[in-house]
Amino acid sequence: MVARQARIAAAGVAIGLLVASHGLPVARAAPTPARIVSLVPAATEMLFAVGAGPQVVGVSSYDTYPPQTATLPKLGALLDPDVERILSLRPDFAVIYATQTDLERQLHRAGIETYAYRHAGLPDVSRTILDLGLRTGHRAEAESVVSSIDGSLARIRRAVAGLPRPRTLLVFGRERLALRGIYASGGIGFLNDMLTSAGADNVFADVKLEAVQATTESVIARQPEVIVEVRGADTPMPHGAVQDEIKTWSILGSVPAVRNGRVFYLIDERLVVPGPRVAQGVRILANAIHPGAVR
Image 1 (cartoon, rainbow, N blue to C red):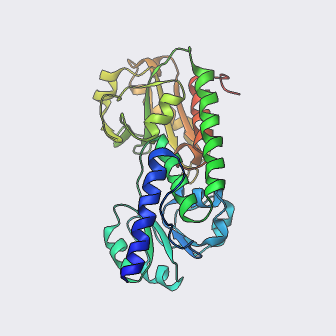
Image 2 (tube, rainbow, N blue to C red):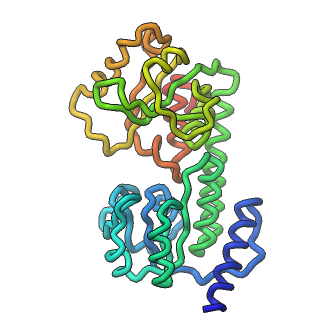
Image 3 (tube, rainbow, N blue to C red):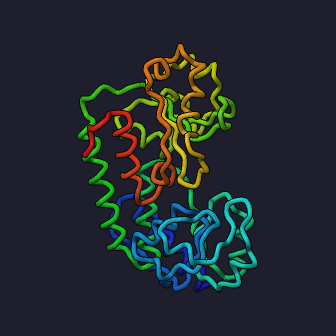
């Protein structure tokens, strides 16, 4: 047991050094896992992107990409992990949310190593890909994925450089057909970073939270020039519902975005999952805010 703990500690040091510098690990790595479960859709995408897909034996209830996840056992998610089913798959490595501390303790008692995932900013997407690539035996592939993401983001930023940066409200949740329960991006986190990379300024940039519960009063006070709502592809939207949702904003006629018809409702997983397709999501945002700017 002591020897095993020492190996895990050494692997943690190696991963920490990689995260800090994108350099090469200098400590001993833990054995490459053969059976992986992931309760985090973004991390699942990362695992498949770096070539660890054949090692993945179970995913969360919300995993839809890549298509191979459709045939894998579903293991619950953030609030309802199916511990019994996870253990039945005999994994030696599990990717879980950092807040799932009870689950982490249960898995550790069963001798299963865990990786605690945290949502953060765009740079952290690349760091997590590198972490998982190193830990699963796919370091070179992970470095290639990160290089591609960084290159795509750099091209988008160059394309929008010098263009006007509209003050933008980025909404990721609210009640259907009502301006209640509005959740918007605050001034930190991957959604804020995606928005700024797409050539806009976040109207809530000064609020150093990932999520802001906005009101119609605060939206009026912030006077956004553009409003962008983003949803995942699993959002059920009947025919004509998108236009109905956009019309919901018409009661705020004093807001420049509404007055000038610059309210957008975008449905695409790449906009809400901070994984290896995140640069594609930034491109979608950029072309909504600056039509035709990014090829």
